[in-house]
Image (tube, rainbow, N blue to C red; front, side, top):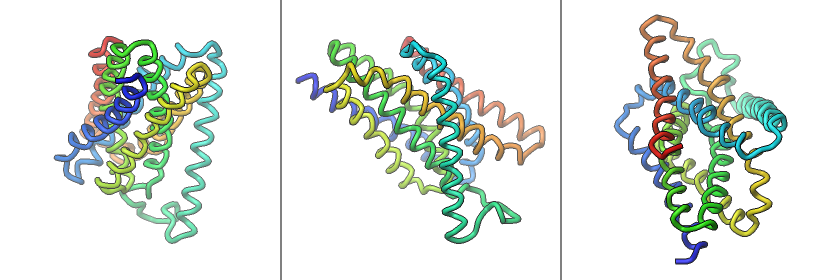
Length: 256
């Protein structure tokens, strides 16, 4: 099988496997339990950012200040994007900002931004897969397996956030699968223009990190403060820690 065939096959299969595995894990969770698992999603997002994405971004850049500026710019962009979604919602029927009792979900805002950030992240994964297969097939397969192992806990967090954001289970799976196609796009572009694409890896990673930080800190954590009792707080802290630990364990298992 040719190198290009390997890249296409692995990019499609890897994205689908990580998304479907995450969906399968949460399939047994009742709708009422999704709210509690948002804490886990926060931990998975922050763990992915600070244990995986940012370290890789720093490794691939010689301009750390530019990377930091990219993340800062990305956070501002996602703030503006969320405002645009809010304005659209307010002009097409009730606005939660004016409601005495805000709804349980956020009308898709955090889900939309997670999908955008995840698309950037998947795009970079495709670049890394292509670079590994160009080196040799064995390295490509190992790299792809490592990426899938890392993606499952993160995709689990993303899937939970989509459910929390008001998406149905079917729509959450469909949108996550659509986002995973960015892996194939990144891989194909990298295969045909690898030297040019490598220079953009830190930028894409920085934007992915910005979206995840923004959603975790601006959209999800404030919701946890609505339950201030000690038992709920301890549960939240434990689930956030579990989310972080799942990312750390996934990284350790593949030797990174």
